Image (tube, rainbow, N blue to C red):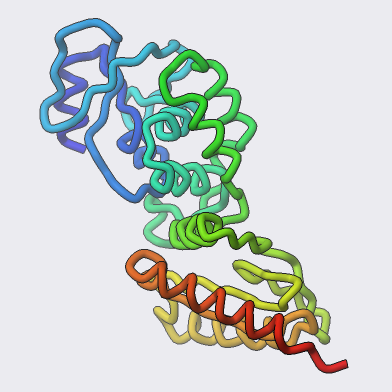
Length: 258
């Protein structure tokens, strides 16, 4: 934060952008950098960070905590153009969904900050910028139902492997309770759950997770549940994909009892 203030005080025309703007907007990112956008021409240097020389409309900026930053839509468009894909989509899916707020002391969730449609319009506004064509393709992969960065990365790993489950599909238990699995392969009855770093962080959370697991298992459509940690997703994605493929094959080979 100190570097953001120092650079903007020294160069008032600089606007906080990209991952730095995302963090200020309360959007989850995989990386954090000091990043600014400035005029395409000029000799301004950014101390301790990165300067993007890009055209920027006056209505594509806002003020947060006294700092000039790019709007949410423009920030997401910038991240999609800049890549990499996984980092950009983690931010995009955080922006378009309800997420825990870093500014709420770890309590409560903030509302969605934008929509996929608004991000698409921000991309089209800068359609002449480098990377826009690829950015459109990546935006088409975004899922506003994603509940965490780990879920986003897990889905992308499955997508790259040719696996395309449904996300957060509504299932109903025999007692009428609702259950929303992270991912569901409907034809095989396979649920894939991604457990975040804070899974079982308290006795109450442990109780909720146990009830969720039992609810899912009681749904008639569910034949098997696979659970992976965020560490599995980030560090052992190959093993995760092998386990999912193996379960899908086994379930396809065994017909459910009539």
